Amino acid sequence: MCYPVHYVSRKNRNYGIEGRAYKATRSILRFMLRSEPIERQNGYVRKQKLKIAFIHSEKRIHAGLHTGAAQINRLMALALAERGVRVRNFYPRTQLTDAPIHLKGVANVLFFYSLLEHKGEILRNDIIQGTTYTPLPFLTFNVPVVCHFGSTAQGFITSTPRTSDLSPTEREVFKELVRLSVIPEFDLKTMRPMEDIADVETIAATRASACIATSQKVRTELAAMGVSNERIHVIHNALEGYWFDEPRTIERQPPHLVFLGRLGNDVFTLKLKGLSRLVQFYREFPEIPKTTICMTTNSKLKDWLRVSFPKHYMFVNLRKDLIPGALAPLYGGILFLPSRYEGFSLSLVEGMSQGLVPIAFPVGIAPEIIRNGENGFLVSNIEEAVARARELLNNEAARLVMAAAAKQAAEQFKSGRIALEFEALYRRIVHEYRAAKDPCLPVKVPGTSIN
Image (cartoon, rainbow, N blue to C red):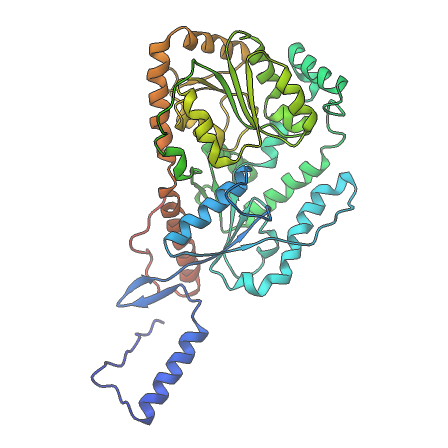
């Protein structure tokens, strides 16, 4: 049964001993219940400050980080803080550093269980959110858990072939890399760590209060894991504001072929990111300038790439906020996305924001943002990619029209909207959680909506 809440009016308040006792008791109760995010007032729900615990797999959250997950976590936290949402970051400290290779996946999972030493602090928040499986230790506690999927381990596994299954031309690239000791092997010795992570991601996703997918592709993968559709929410990643700043007066260069993104260090990641496709693509255009802006710590790979192509300009591990300045003179160039798998692909949207025309395989956000022949091209094989690039290089007018359309399409990913979408989802989750405990709460939180 629901009982009305009684208030003492200001004019009838007793300011004697009883009044002071009442005020003191009320103050104590308010202090004890200060974490309550929803308050009933005249039949409506009044917005309170949300408190979110972010669990990170990257220890340092700062502007210079290049990895997609860390960049998005930082952007989310800053955008939410601007809207008055309190965000606290938690990073585990204890790791099994000497685990054998076949147990690396289990070691990564146990790494996040070490956060239980901060259980008291973390459980005082309204929502616990982490990347994919990282909030796993808190699924059994009485606080809503959100799993944020920028990609899935199962997507990595199913999208990355063995070297023996590649085309002869691509196999030759990896033979060259092994011969020069750029990589030690043609294939990883074991996939068990990644398979273990994929299994744990399924447990986390199916038991979390909600899952956030960064693209329709990731939504489909979560549904295949067994996550119900009503618990999957698509919220696209966003870019920092500096990607949309107008560049200073610059001299535009002739059209370049451009690669932007992470290449990785090991053979699995190099295949996942399509290195052999990129090499094949570049080698088809010896007379065209090429610009590579990549992230890798493999020094032998960096040295090999620098000298492998004529007219090749290369930036390695460039600070994120300096990349727009490097790309601005290349407006109207061709951005090649050779990846076999992406959950979202920040680099695609980043390149488009600078007026690069994308030629991409249908991964991540590409099928949702690229309109064939209008702002870029989707391709299914390297031969088609080469043919589309030749068309663009031979038709400057069409290429510049598509460059402007690509730049405009990227504007939908400005960071201003990410906080609105996340806050709306958080308030819905918290309200539904509280309503399940207190049937007196209204069914709908006024002013919040999310698809």
